[in-house]
Image 1: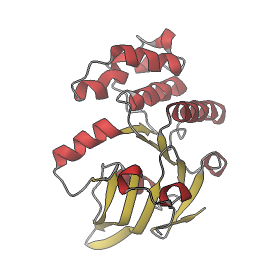
Image 2: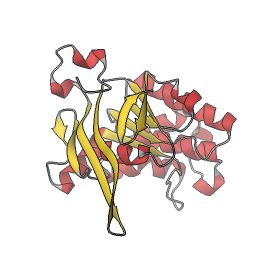
Image 3: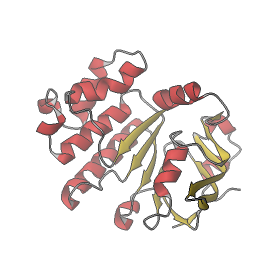
Length: 237
């Protein structure tokens, strides 16, 4: 059984019932003619509705792993299955479509488009997928407490408010999996805790699978599992 495989995922469930599976994932970079191995045989299974926090020292490759799991960076070796379908054995267009339909992303730096309002930023992934979901976007902004700020630009929002917009945006297409890369890294402790409270509440209410990269060991305790990335491999943290 691969490291990190939860009991729920091991009880004779079909592969497609396990939303996220990484098998023998390697990622090596070439810098100045030298090979730099970052991921060295990562195996991971995440059960439906599970909250997994990935920890490790700075430079350990946590974000690289998250990007590989989310279809944002191709592994050198290995594959990732999302709801039973390979991310990397198909065309780039199919991978982009899978990301749009089945995954949501929350990043440390928010990545809101400055010329769009909160509502328009939330709608963006739906628009890319050719869907009109304004009523859902308004509901999500209400869920994260931002109805009064719905028409405000990112520069008119605090850091915590911008991250709440990003959470709503990640949920607009009703993805099965949410990825969060240091989602409180740009926030003070109190605001960060509030944002994490909001993220976990929304994930639990909507029964999403959550994978979070964090350097905060206390925050990582809020997950169902805490995994440590060390020397390119995962171990129970």
